[in-house]
Amino acid sequence: MSEKSKPIIFSGIQPTGIPTLGSFLGAIKHWERLSSEYTCLYCVVDMHSITVRQNPAELRANGREMLAWLIALGLDPGKNILYYQSQVSAHAELAWILNCFTYMGELNRMTQFKEKSSKHAENINAGLYTYPVLMAADILLFQTNLVPIGDDQKQHLELCRDVAGRFNNIYGEIFAMPEPYIAPVGARIMGLQTPENKMSKSEENVNDTIFLSDAPDVIIRKFKRAVTDSGNQIRVSPEKPGINNLLAIYSCVTGKTLAECESEFAGQGYGHFKTAVGEAVSEMLKPYQQEQSRLIADASYLDKIAAEGAAKAHELAAPTLAKVKAAVGFNTTL
Image (cartoon, rainbow, N blue to C red; front, side):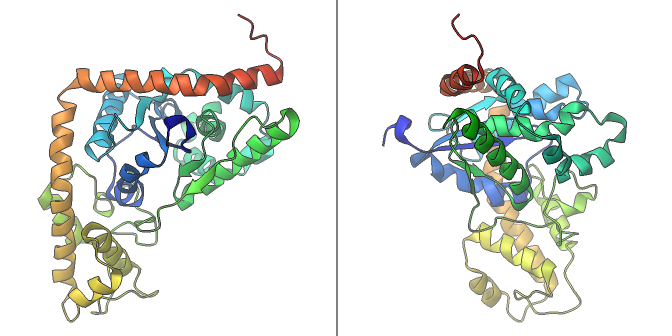
């Protein structure tokens, strides 16, 4: 199948903070095999990041660090398009046009705006409000067919589809209609201290989240402190969210089914089980950590990969942006 005939997958990754075990098991781990069937774009969305005040030097360093993680975790730059959002101006151009086709009522319903506004009350800016429109532009710019998302991002994809449909109804079939890609296994890894919530790098309790850069002793200590319940049975149950989460993690890391995991730890205590999960995660992450350390030491290589990816992304985006500009009536004869 030629590159041009492959369906397109797009995903944007924030360069703020180290990726978590949840983001790896729930999403990134599954991306490596997609490149044989899809044209895959993985964008470090540094433009999204500045809705919250950033230290410029740290933002640049974090972007490079995220790029190194993506490559270390298996995204071959020869098979995937990896780049920084800010290096492809078409993202911002399309976002402004789509702003004019997005209703304030739609943006008012976005739950993430409400959540971030409460956390950053001193800086409720227009970019934070129109963040979902830039996200829609990111996706629609490439005629994206599939978007890897978690349950918490479904609302943004629905808005993207609404805006795309509205634009298409007015001007004809300009945009492809993107669909969600949700990995069938490990799609929602929960916090170790808050198993009712998705594992998040923004969680204030450091014991809630496993970061991919965590040292082995830190990982095992966090798992030993993981919330379980007052029982002693290691089995999947609606009444056991903590145990369910640990079993899901162990299943993802080892490749064993949940039933096999239950059988392996039958009759054993929670302490032994939690330590075993921590050791399995630590061992699984070790080669990824070593490769990321090697890559981050070679800044010129990472900058080269980003520049080459940006050039490819610009080439893919140009036809869509040209059609959109012509459709709305811009003078494109330069």
